[in-house]
Image (cartoon, rainbow, N blue to C red):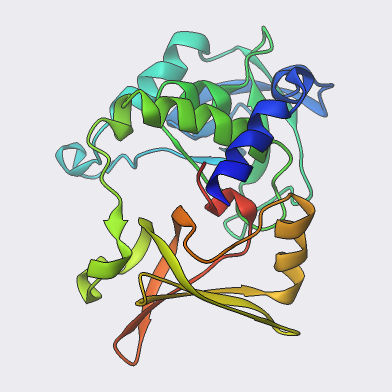
Length: 247
């Protein structure tokens, strides 16, 4: 599966990747300040959260407790946008999150995709939330290049081994392993990595995987990401989008 998924990247039209930057704007706004690497405030007081990425968190109460590369991500935005600049917003299916923040792909006044910029510099991880996945393929390609070059947050990247998981590994993680069991029925697909980690994909999202030519076979070696939980001492992870399978 990994090889087939990688080949799919190679045959995708160049225009698809270019579309991350070249697109009509839904709204043009004015920047008040940069909060961190993936959030900005507009002059009307609205917060805008960049779709498709997650940058390291800044601890605004105690900056010494901020995550590694958090300030680098903020400084990268500061190189390309400043207070008073016009920003261009492009919306996806969901325009607001549960915190009331505007969700958008944000572009500088010159048309630079700021989320893509963070990914290219290794200062963000791709993150698909809900149905906002308009540019997930080109975002994933940018993340992969930064990861292979060990840029920024990927400089010491070491995914967890499925065979060695324990309860201290809970949370949003990256895991590698080999498919050792497969079972598909009307409820969806379930499989195991290294006979230990149970992966589930419900029937509805499974169709999305298949439509994107992402399938699974015994002995496939996978690198994936998601929220790891434990049930009855066993590690479990649910996949809901092909972006969770890293090429």
